[in-house]
Image (cartoon, rainbow, N blue to C red; front, top):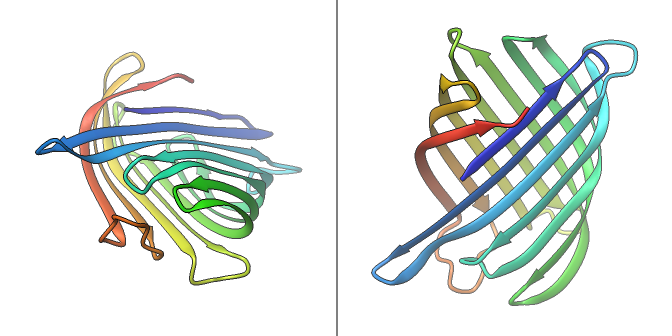
Length: 193
């Protein structure tokens, strides 16, 4: 499942996504995740510089993360800000609350993110989203996310897509043997906004 809703205007942008996956191999659960993200951006006095708020909620059954919530302010800049072509970078500080099989914890983290989008034709587009975050008190506790794909509209708000998703966690949880979780998906997408 991959739901996205973006709204762009001269004064503010609101970028939202909801991603979920479930899978089993030989009756063993190999995928089980749901992630929601929301990024509000206010552009004071122009189209390039923005300030805003970022939020994320995550449940990962394989890594035994019952809930991880993030919220915090961010600042950023649009290097390209056209309807058919966008590129931006942002930085921020988040408060993180996590409840997992290992217990509960909360901490501050810094986050860097970059996004690139281009319309390849009237009905198709390419996108790339990258983010890296780390615990403010322990920089070796860090996470990375890369999402890239191609999407082609088939009717109104429905599109077909293929996407590569790589989630990096440099602290291995119990029962997890790899730092990277790479997923390639193809499917239907619905754009709400």
